[in-house]
Image 1: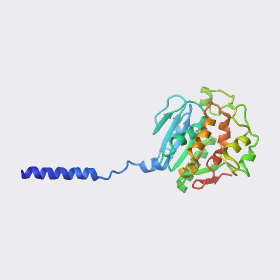
Image 2 (image 1 turned 135 degrees about the vertical axis):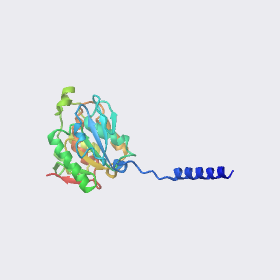
Image 3 (image 1 turned 180 degrees about the vertical axis):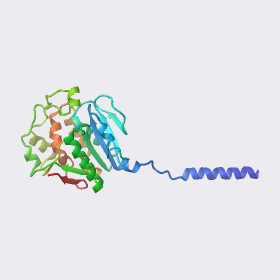
Image 4 (image 1 turned 180 degrees about the horizontal axis):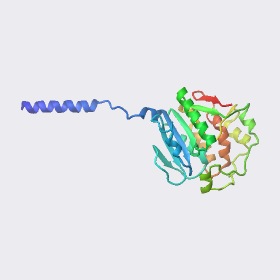
Length: 256
């Protein structure tokens, strides 16, 4: 009887230890919540994601795949082939609005192109150094809206060879509102924005994303959801600083 009582006490002790045990997160867990790399892919070779610094445990990689099958990364989500990278970025924000990483890095799958890869690696170094999201301004202007006031496009073909081989279309679906100046006024009003980034390469903090309501991002998402080659995507490329205006917790780096 005494032996049985001792055994029960020991069993209760073990159960108590298990119930109150503090579980340590797996390596990189805290970092993955801190910084997520979102990649918009169509048919690009993503082998560059295996290079430094991308395979660091500091980053969690989500690829949105709009083309053929690809090798597995941390997370892969299949989307229809519409809206280029701008659709992907807005889709990610809308779907993860309540669960965003502290820093989100947005990249096109074509980052292995030399003129893009240099910018990406520079941005990643700045993120590490400043411990914050970094928005690289490729061009600083007096007024983004006035600079591109009459900008509009009828045709454009992708510069990435892998994508061009798979989809050589050149005709753009016209934006619902054009040219750029009228489109900008409709979505952003009279805000004054001076920074322009190109190639769909930038990062932004969760705090700066959440300054705008989710419906704001849904409206922009609709603009690039109707075609695989939308003119509005070119408007979006020039307007990311306006989308997240004002950038308060994201560091702005002026490259020139």
